[in-house]
Length: 232
Ligand SMILES: [Zn+2]
Image (tube, rainbow, N blue to C red; front, side, top):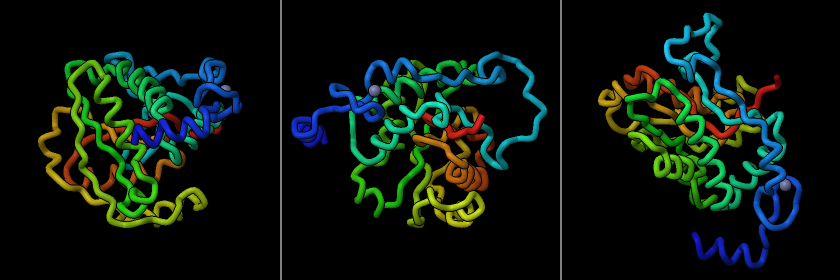
């Protein structure tokens, strides 16, 4: 992978995914312009009362994210590039963003974090050559300063059609039965589990993963992503 990356960089010099300036895959001024999303109080203040509002998802307990990509077009461009071309520099940057959020979570004090990658179907994986979720999981686990484990508990048994063009309802139908749990989730009881992916748009993928994991016995599971797409 690294040799191919070096060759690619030679023939296609790094260019900012957002403003096209040459030199880096996301230039410093685009990085500086990023609006980081502050974590809701209940995630970073111990004993904060959980808000009584309607839970956002049926199965997923919450989604932790670094930024809203509806407000950060440079992040959206960088993630789009990351999905289709392996770029170490972007992976490292995304890992930094995700790690920062993880270290702010009070629920992780004295607890082990468990990272569960969202799998790709093997056909999609061989086409793309890498799974962006695995790259994030490995990067975060190697840099996080606390007890952390990687658990590939899910496999993708159905090669779903591209989700992007479907409505929320259709996405849910499309994903039914797409994931299976492999391994025992009961030993994760006293740990804090996160489903890791690059983005959360409607949340359908994370929600379906959470549904099968809870059916297998997992009590709580959070989403952990670089960016979410939210209107506000
Ligand atoms: Zn730029």
